[in-house]
Length: 299
Ligand code: ATP
Ligand code: MG
Image 1: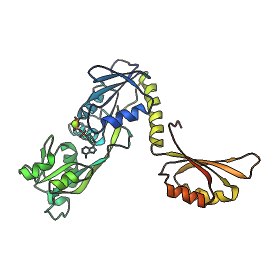
Image 2 (image 1 turned 135 degrees about the horizontal axis):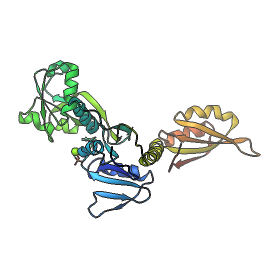
Image 3 (image 1 turned 135 degrees about the vertical axis):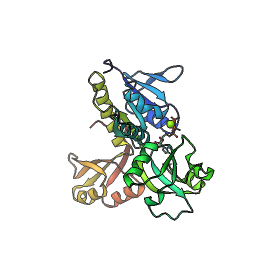
Image 4 (image 1 turned 45 degrees about the vertical axis):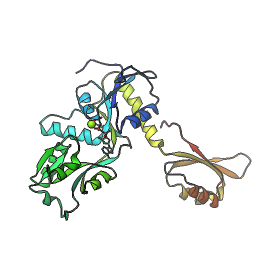
C-alpha cells in the first residue's frame, strides 16, 4: 500500500475535449488552484486537492499506480484499459465512480456505406481497425465472431480506404467523420461520457474525507446542472392544476402567506423552464412567476 496522504490528486486531460469541462466542473465544486509554471501540476489552494494535467490515456494507469487518486476520463478509455487488464489476467485497479454528463459519444462499429448490413455474423473473417482492441475483441468473442483486430492509434476511419481494414470500430458523436469516409455505423459497443474514475476500494486515510466531500459537492453540482428555481403565487384552488405542470420538480414547497388567501410556491425544476411553460402555468393560475438560476446545492 502506498504511503498515507493527506492531499487528493486528480488527473485530468491537459488539452482536448475533456480538459475545459473537467476543470469547470471541479471549479464549480469550490476547488481552485495555483498554477505552476509548466502547468502540469496545479496546487490546490482552496482545498488540499491538486490537479495533474496529462494525456487522457495515461489516467487509468496513474490511478492504478497510485500516482493519482482520481481522474476525469472517458468511459471508453477506462473500460478499454480495464478490459485489457482483465484479459491479461490482472485484477481491476480502477473503476467508474460517477458519470459526469459531458463528453458524450459512443464506440460504434462502422462498415462501408455500400455494404447491406445483415448483422454481426457478416464480420466473420474480416479485418476491423480500431484504437479499442480490448473492447472490440471482447465484443467479437461474445458474438462468437472470428475477425482480425487491426490496432491503430489514430485515423481509424480512413483505414478501409487505405486497404488496411474492411470495417472500423471507433468513437462517434455526430457521425460526420464516418460519413465523410463513406462509412455507416451499424452497432453500438459502448455508450460513453466523461466519468470520475477512482480506485476499486475506498481510501483509508485523510483522502477519504476529502473524496467524500468532493463527491457530495459533485452530486449537488450534477443535480442542479440545467436546473432552475421557479417561484410563484397561486390561490389554494389553483394548486392541484399547477402541480401536473411541474413533473420535473423535486417536491415543490407550498407556503402559506400571512393574512392573504394565496399561497407561495417554490419548485426546483430539472427540465427546461421555457416561456411556453411559464405561459401554461400563468394560464393555470400562477402569478408573479420568477425563474432563478441555481448556484449550488447540498442535499
Ligand atoms: P490526449 O491528447 O489527451 O490523448 P485524445 O486525442 O486521446 O487526447 P480527445 O480527442 O480530446 O482525446 O477525446 C477525449 C475523449 O472525449 C474521448 O476519449 C471520448 O471519451 C470523448 N469524446 C467525445 N466525443 C468524441 C468524438 N466525437 N471523438 C472522440 N472522442 C470523443
Ligand atoms: Mg488520448
